[in-house]
Every structure is written in C-alpha cells, then in structure tokens.
Length: 516
Ligand SMILES: NC(=O)c1ccc[n+]([C@@H]2O[C@H](COP(=O)([O-])OP(=O)(O)OC[C@H]3O[C@@H](n4cnc5c(N)ncnc54)[C@H](O)[C@@H]3O)[C@@H](O)[C@H]2O)c1
Ligand SMILES: N[C@@H](CCC=O)C(=O)O
Image (cartoon, rainbow, N blue to C red):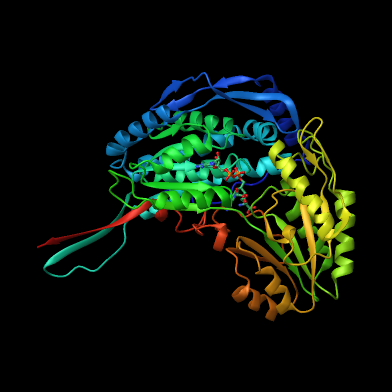
C-alpha cells in the first residue's frame, strides 16, 4: 500500500537554513554552467553538430548550456525505437511503472534545491516560483503513479451465467510530448510521465528555450530504473521536428502544451490520416488564456488587490493562468485600481531572480520582450497607463509591471494573450455585466470572483465559463490533485492535468467477453 497523496509543501525562504540552502545550490549550478547535453535515443547519448544555445533570460551573456538538436533523421530513429520499445513496455505491470515514478519523485525531493536553483537560471524564475515548479513536478509523479495503480484495479462490468466479461484500459502507443518553457519542469515532467506511466512510449520535445531541465529529468528517471527507449529526449526545432513527429503515421497521440497558434496547427495536422496510418490520432492540447478576475461591489478590496497583483505579476505574468484582465464593479473600481497601482509600484520589485528580493524576474527571450512591449504601445492608445510601461533589454529581458485603466472589453489588449506583466482594468455597472465581459474572449482557462455575495458566487459557478474558477483568491497556482487544471474553448481540450481522469486520455478501454 502506498501512503495517500499529499502535495509537496513549498519551501519557506524566510527560514535562514532554507535561504542558505538555495543560495548554495545556485552557486553550485553556476559552477556547472556551459556544459553540453546530448540527445537520448534508446538510452544512447547522441551528440549533434547543430546545438541549441540556452541562455539565462536575466543575463543574456550567461550561457546555461548547449543542447544537441535533433533533425528529422534522428526523430525518425527515435520514433522507430519508441515503436519497438512499445511492443514490450505496454505489457509491463502498472506497479513496475508506478514504482519508477515514486523513486524519481523521491530523488527530486532529496535534491530539491538543486533543481529549483537550475530553474532560477534556465527559466528566469524567482525563488518562490521556481520552488513551486519543482514541487509541482514531484506532485505530478506522485499523483499519476497512484492514479495508475487505481486504474489497474479495473472497472466492474456485468457478466451473465453464460459469459464472463471484463473491461480494462490499455495504453495507446507512441506519444509525442511537446512542452512549453514557462513551467519548464512541472509541465514537461507531468505530461511526459503521465504518458509513460500509462504504458506508452514517448518522444519528448521540450521547448527550445528550456531543454536542459528535461535532460536532468531524464537522468533522474534513468536512475530510478526507467528502461532505455521508453522516453526519448529529442529537443529540436518545433517546425522541423515537431511537424515531422505530429505527421508521422506511427504517432498514436500528441500531448501538447503551449500557444494557441501552435496548438491549433497541431490539432489540424493530427486530424489528417497519412498513408500507412492505422488509427485516428488522439490529441491532448492545452493552450493559452486571457484570464479575468471579477471584483464585486460587496467584497474585500485588500484581498482583491493582493490576489490581482500576484496573479498578474507572479513570474512576470508568464502563466497561462495569469490575470490579465480585471472587471470591477463601478462602485469599487477607483479604490481597487488605486490599491493595485500602489501595490504594483511599491511591492512588485523586478530584477535578477537569483536575488530573493526580486518579486519578478525577466521575460523569457527577445521575441517575448518585443511582443510584450508592442502590446504595451497598443495599450497606451487603448487605455490609460497607470504604472510601468517600460522595458530594458540591455542585460536581460526586463519589463516593468504594467497597469492600464479604463479599457474597452473588446480592445486588443483585453482580447489577445500577451503573456507578460501587463494588466488591464475594465468597469461594469452590475454583476451580470461583469460576467458578460469576463466571458467575451475566445479563451476559457482560469478566472476568479472576489465577492461576499453568496448568490453571485452561485451565479458565477454556473455562468463564468472557464475550466478553473476560483472564489475569493487569485486565479493562478493550481495544485496537483486539488485543482485539476485545464481550460475550455481556445484554451484547450480541458484534459485537466493533475485531475482524476487525466491518465485516461492516454489510454483506451478494452472489453473482453468469454463464453462459458
Ligand atoms: N493551458 C495550459 O495548461 C498551459 C500551460 C503552460 C503554458 N501554456 C501556454 O503556452 C504558451 C507559452 O508557451 P510557449 O511559448 O512555449 O508556446 P509555443 O506554442 O511557442 O511552444 C510550445 C512547444 O511547441 C513547440 N512547437 C513550436 N512549433 C511547433 C510545431 N509546428 N509543431 C510542433 N511543436 C511545435 C515549441 O518548440 C515548444 O516545445 C502560452 O500561450 C501559454 O498560455 C498553456
Ligand atoms: N497550472 C498553473 C499554470 C500553468 C500555465 O502556465 C497555474 O495554475 O497557475
């Protein structure tokens, strides 16, 4: 019997011992910067001439490492090996696969600060955010291992005196896992290990800005006993390797987390049946958000201002769950706006994330920096700039936490995902109107309502159309097993990472019936 699941506690960095432990882990990571990492295909380390240079977004000159880059030939080799490995891996016991995850989670837990320090450097994450990312990776492994053991117990169906019937789940085949850079450890690890523990083999293509943490996860899984060929590590160009693997006739499913642009492209390509393909590909596609916090007339405004500030500027707003829109009742609009602007100016410090005093670090790269600043320019025309608005890319990609007021719900910056530290305020004259505004985007990922009105809570529960809706708190920071995570509409397939049915997306049900 395994102990019941409990989420990994976050580290309290106000405790001197913890602070010192992370400081020393950061020094250790700094001492190891600049290494070269190979691909891992069928357990074999393969170096390529072409490499991805991975830099610290807080300091562009600091190279975190160089990573071998897969091309289509290597992707083909990895696919063949994953396919061959599936022929026996699919028959392994669920407990064998789950035990690998329990062990891997224990290894990461023992070396937690080392992983967190790496996330500070590779992802530009402030301490608190990096620590939460590591904790979530541990949670995913612990949670999915238990879920697989439960699924393995089977499901009762009816038999009759003349026949014996059974129903159980079997894996799908070779899965392509494509992960984003923002939860560089947690989402990459959760999507990969979910596919693996349910009996599939995997081709892992991590984001090109953050592939090193995925290599480190591979080392941990190998140490925990993962056989060669089950997960194949093949970083590479999204367009070249990504399209090739998505189109491949032997790909059985694709688990993608990332932007709407790429997600819809994959959805479309995966629908095409290629020559030699014997199945309809399954897709698990989780995309962006344009997430709203509604603040009601009767509400705790200090709580609202705290919730908004953290949800908007935690990890520089680079979360699919980040609050980028506030809809406030006209009776509290001015006071709420003032409180959020003051907090943003006085409490949201931004700087090197390796320094624990930084609330916010950089944004991930030049592309993101340019795109966000472009949205800020649009925002200056569409609304009233209340805080921030400037960037500095001389050393790393830093953008001030930015607040706009008096926006039209249909304005560009209230409709498009910016994925940066930019927050907009809109006014509503009633709770019904606030809900209408909150729902008027193509997305449907997270949302929150700050209110003391019980009827309004119930109304929002029914009518606020998002996958993760929170009351009297912010709209980020879902915890595995507590807040199953995934969105509606253009936010994705609502597969609910860390939820009770997540692994079923990676499996198919099989009925057997024996005449007696
Ligand atoms: N819904 C969620 O759970 C969730 C979680 C995290 C991030 N996101 C979203 O992810 C986005 C940010 O991440 P990103 O910038 O890494 O997204 P992205 O779509 O640019 O990249 C995601 C992954 O797709 C790969 N890719 C790019 N082109 C490809 C192609 N043609 N075929 C296959 N793969 C390809 C990239 O290399 C990367 O590994 C935001 O929109 C954010 O909201 C969503
Ligand atoms: N699960 C995370 C968001 C993941 C996407 O970026 C949260 O709830 O904040």
